[in-house]
Image (cartoon, rainbow, N blue to C red; front, side):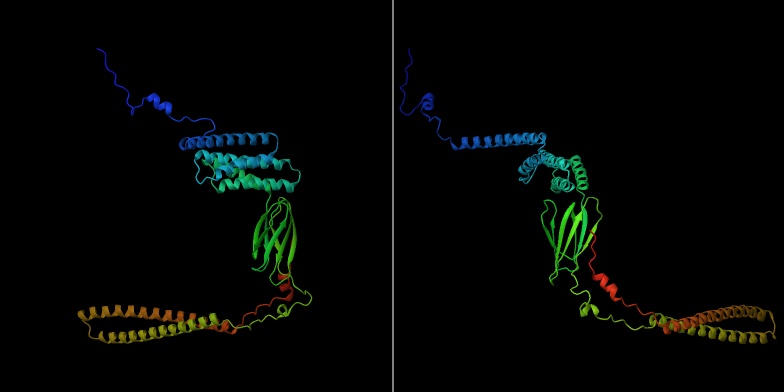
Length: 376
């Protein structure tokens, strides 16, 4: 018996019919949003990797062609692309370290091609800036990269040949500007004492004072120069006839005696002398009492018996001890009194002896302090 087939319903659809009726994507039509997002993201990642690899190849090509400045800028571009991120993983830190060190190496190679010492110093300074950026932002993955970067920084800093320059304006309100040099940007500072490091070259230092009278100095520096001091204090308007403030006489206080040590010795000597006299008097009085006790003991010996002999022996020992005590007080009183007397004499001498008055500064010495001293 054959099976009866159910006629297809109008509401049911086969799988093949459903697939055939789905809209298909054709060339020129837009992709749905989910598929489009994935395609854009994948293309961006692939494009970034391809661009980075192409840029690295370009940097190596420029270096091999000895275009060192362009190669340094190329490596710096790679580093800036990674620097825009807030956080970096270990691989990115290693890449940043390598890019900036390569940029510094290119600048050093450019410096070696220069014959001028001034230009050579400039390119070494550019290399130093790359290494300083690396260390300041901690672009290193491990300790070995950090130590290598520190070593490169020290070597490049020595090759720049900086000179320590101290500008002394004499006034806090003075404004200092430094111009000149090879590709040197003008720097300004408002200070009384300003310390800066300058590479070899010729510079103009201008000190502008609020009360007028600007001072300009020309400074020529070479590698290996010792620390330099530039004095640009405000000039004297009339050196032959200085203002009345410079001619004002110096007031010198009158000579006064050494009152403090003299009074101290006088007071101490008086107290010591009084103490010595007191001790001597005490010793004399005690000695007189002992003599009276000894005479009384001598009278008791007339009625001599055993009990009296024992009592007399004990009294005799007490008298001997008291006599020695009185002699000690007497001697101490003499010593203290003598020291007090000497202190009185020395205190009186110091009190009466005046000190030497201070020597007022001469006018030439005051003018020498205000003069401008400059050694190029």
